[in-house]
View 1 (tube, rainbow, N blue to C red):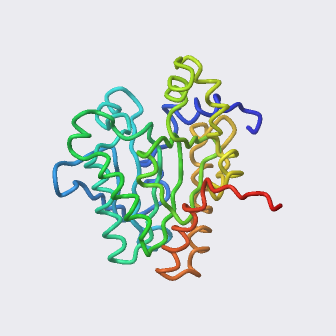
View 2: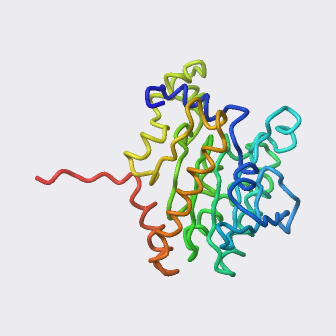
Length: 270
């Protein structure tokens, strides 16, 4: 599928049948115990997570949750969390830190919910707090971009020691439609924007934003989810094993340096 255009990958990333966080948890983990609520305001169902076993090892697993039909999309707010969702995620990650559990996140969101009520309840602060807290975690953090990864809504659970992307996932500062609207005042140019933005897994691997690409079955992840689960399971296991050599402080330091180095250009030597 290497000959697909960026716009075609955007379409696959948004495919309604694409596996989501609930599917990955069911397929890759056992003994999952869901945790709900932010202990401040309410339960946000657009973030799903809890404690589970991964190959017999206790982990905290969480991610964005979308729907496959209109009813589910409305229930899960189209995968756009409010501040309560990010506070719930932070509560789970803080608990993982306390008990020494690795954190595994699945990223698939068009962005954090931009509604007035979300801003009034501290959307920006909630995202910022997650970024700061994830940067300092002393347990392994693995992040997988499985579909759309847009804006701070994605990054709020994306500060990992190892960041992987499915082959047809996308990861960017905003949607192609938003980019086209800002740059050319025309959202209809989203296809052109997809090429300019360098938002595909192949682009981001070259730029050092991600650490690896998970190949998808021919036709996309939805075409053969079971095959994808097998490949992803092995990739997560390798990533966790690779982080065993780092102690708590070294994990935080590696994660900090990794993200600080992004976007830094080196001047040519005279």
